[in-house]
Length: 610
Image 1 (cartoon, rainbow, N blue to C red):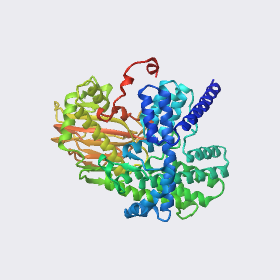
Image 2: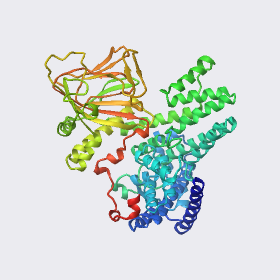
Image 3: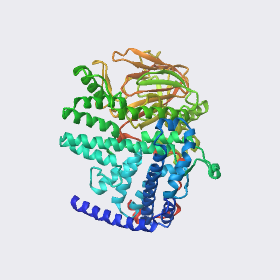
Image 4: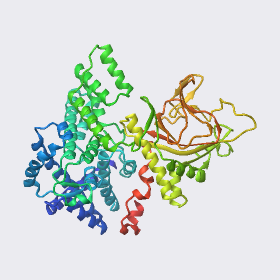
């Protein structure tokens, strides 16, 4: 059955390519903007196949134009180093005329395109629309390739990842084949993995080195196209009449920053970054081929990318301690890391998440504390939300029947998840401004976590909880060892007898990072504590409004007893596992969502089936 399915897919692909070829002859010479306009017209007329094909041609046209522009830029800037290009704005003026003269013969007049639309094409986001069009006509093979390509350029999209899992089931496949639109380095990478599995070390080295070279070429092209442009990229409508648009360092830094972050993953299931996987395979291939020096260089270079990886650190110790080899790096990796760090510094000057004056309390490798992340107004809005709509013992089903908190009889506990708040927004029980505050605050927390802790792997939300604990006087005085929240780890269960936190069921082992954001200062008690395996306090943090704590989920912590008043906070748990992620795109406030096309409001059998 699978063989028949793939034969049908092959035939459909051939037909698709022939039709695309015919369309290309009809539309040759048209800009990607014109082709996109044609696609939009077909989409509004519900001619889904033509809409998909025109849009696919628009993306191809964009890619060809980008390649041609890159060739012009390369000729005009070949005598200038990349860092000089980036740090000295005057160089743009000196090369602008050269770029225009070089490109004009092949490309004609420069195009005018908005910065947002330019990024839509650059990040291949139009493949989401192509997926929709093919789905409407039941062409799931076309949908599969569109979603696969979208994810290669936008690897953090949870909704499209979930869409891919659905398509796996529809097409009865369990892996992602190499697509005709995959980047070249991805194709060499797949051949390298195949050689690795067959233990053909020489071929493995050959393909991974080719893949690395193509990878760096793709990143360099992306960086150059961010720094220079033949076409006129409009950042605002006011610039439309500006004939001499100056180089914009702010937007270029945002664009360049994405070149490092958005270079995809080795597969759409393992979520391993390409560069890390190149080196992980290469070190073993070189070592197995008795090229120990080159293997050691790969290992030391790998550590530049991921200092927290215990396996990498073990390999480094093996080469340095056991084999007595000195530390050495691959020049291409070292140069890439230095360049990315320099660009990151420029990016942070313009887009630093901490738009307010954040005062850092402390910063360690796996935890931090900062103040002033929220305004008092934001804190009040969130406290009102949980006061009015908070659910008794929310998140603790076994404690629903209890009057008091799941942890102690001296407190009550109320909470509301972001998803629950979103459902109340739909029911018009929560205002848009209140929900937007909740949503924006948790997104800000994630950005701060990534920035301050320098988290390189993609970070996803796993659970978001706005909570309120209130002191409830009992018949007797509350003991000081009656913790508001007992000592625990967020991805392991703490065995006090063994003095160890064991990462196994029933713990949420997939959680990687935790954040706690405080909204008020309790009248008395309720401070946060970090402890060691002996339950000795290593750090105590008083609760203050707008104070944010971020830490690795394996760190043991707890909450001291609340002795008076209430304690409001947002608890956020993060994961690197996309299968455990909340789809934040579906929870975005309506102000962020696109308005649906009117024609699609009518029902039809195809869409109902989809």
